[in-house]
Image (cartoon, rainbow, N blue to C red):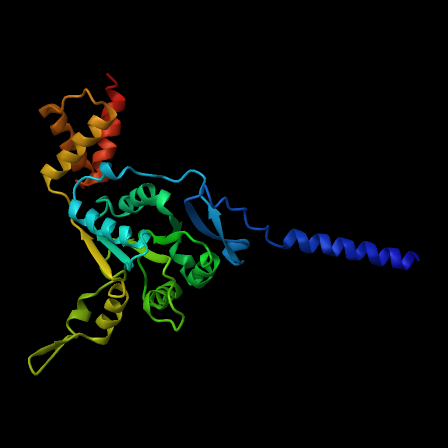
Length: 291
């Protein structure tokens, strides 16, 4: 009997240790009230299974606060409107200068169309190999999901690079009509491009033939049906954005020549006339001058 009791005690201790090592169950999801998610992995160094983690306080942006690049915003919104209404729509790649609204438009669209069933799942580059698992986790849901990859860039041999290519257009499995991929990047083809690759272009019978390395790099970006490039702002556009944010923080403020010069100096210090820099200046100015 003593031997049996000892066996039970050892077995209980072993089971407790196993339970301690197992990943915790994924968090419960309130599908009615959750509009944003982040894909996470369990385990040390993210080696375990993945799950959707609800974002309790997502960063939401009013679409009216997006200034400059209006034609770019309208193109992405049109595609999103098609998507949430159940019509055909395309995956989208947003490239171009930093701080010009690439990420902001995605967050603004989530706020505007959440009540129509739009949901957002943010996925880090290192976890793009989990794309099939992500789609499987939401396949039976009635909502429509944008998988959002922010500030994306690759080396061509990274696992996420190939996983994204397959997900976009290269798998025998039919893509879900309730899932789109929106990605932002400062690189137009998501991967580094080198001068030597342009020297490998061949001309045969008057036709230009790209090198295999160039074709491989273009092959990822061209799988996005919508490709929108955001250009840096001109000075007058930057000043219009500064004025917009100043009036948001202080509707009674007069946008004087002195404030204009100060905002230009602020941009010069940062080496950029972007929407992000304009917002940062407006916060600083109105914080220092509350009346």
